[in-house]
Length: 358
Figure 1 (cartoon, rainbow, N blue to C red):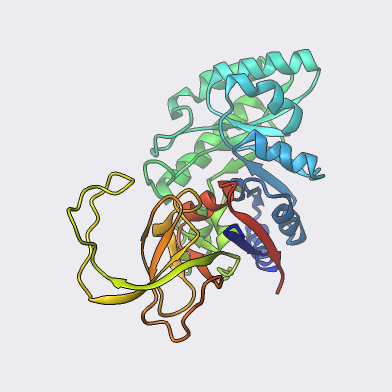
Figure 2: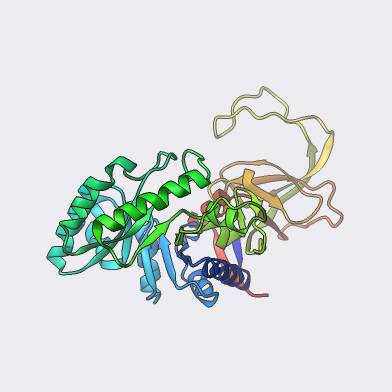
């Protein structure tokens, strides 16, 4: 069997319900970001069961997969679009994040040919230095949007934490609200979103204590909070963390020295490994490697297992301290401690998926 991601659909539905509830209490809309699970349609249905009925994904292939699986709900393109994919984006998406006037003009041209309206959320850069126009470009970008007949701007958004590590604050959130209000006035828009970001914003909202997210933010785009109940490795209060894990099979179990011997060079990934000498230990190999998952971002669910490292195909563990020793063909479960491990597992074609309920 292949390594398998085991997904608890009820846990994801619960998280969707709780996120929807908190956002509704604050007058906020929410789009579920499913890029971390490659737009998995089964997970999308679990999110719908929890009450969130609009989605975002960064890859058009994921969005097309959702559409072909029968997901008819509203879907937006999270990654700013490539010029080469505009026609496909207009066909499969309801809206998209955009950051350049040139792209807006091109979307307008494509929509004119199709005779189809398309909505955009303009992005502004408030310090993280990823996507977005600079604040001083609001007026000139508004002029470009006002010249469009088919492209409709539905709000202003920003991204924080994903590149520069900049966290939401009263200052940058207040600046977003001010800029969004200015842009709305310039456009005379009715439908309007002030989109603050994703899971980091929800984490700040859920954490007890002084709030950094002011009233006036009307939209968030959570992914990790929904799918894992976590943000930056921290549990989010009120959400479930038992949403998913990965299962792998034992393919070798043997007593071996704990320290490699011979001349030591770099490993297969260009690093020089270092091991302490703990004498002979019971070690095991699982059929799970770096082509499947980020090994450093896994944590054994069972006590007594220590992850030592891995190659592209294998994960090596110390099982000396396990109370019940495994046998060849047995499987073991590992939790994802970070978002990257989950993302890699869902991206790998060598990892299967199994869906369970409470």
